[in-house]
Image 1 (tube, rainbow, N blue to C red):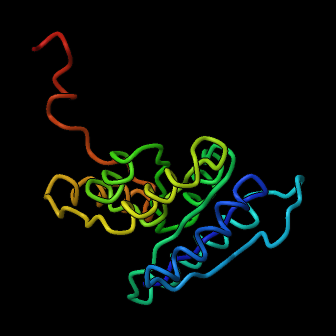
Image 2 (image 1 turned 90 degrees about the horizontal axis):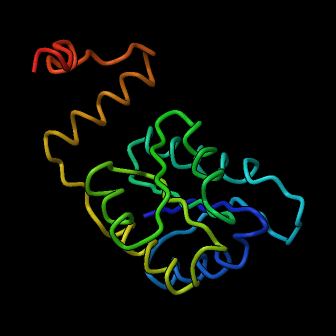
Length: 169
């Protein structure tokens, strides 16, 4: 499996570690930068490229995934989610790493390089990469609603419970 990876200066150390870890664990790593430490770099430059790589390959039928890394992971997740077809999840523990894939079929994982040890973040990445999507109908339906909205900008229909209002319960 090909894994696209991008970060900012705060994620550079983890990114460099993960490039080796990915290869050692049988993945093909694609490094979208940065390649040198620059405290003034802009994470969208690298994270958008990583997400674009994932989206393009998935559109071609490949099962590629992505990793974006920053100080907190928040902005990097937001940047990746701007790319059509990307579902990027910010993970901060084992459960969020697993649920990102099991329930949301996330194709990009975001982690905060200043929030955890390298060992913890590597474990989160491993869990994310190896956890399968559950294919439960409710999760498929919800992902479909997001994908439809991404394509059409039409909001999903409100459920019957929302149309009744609280006074009719």
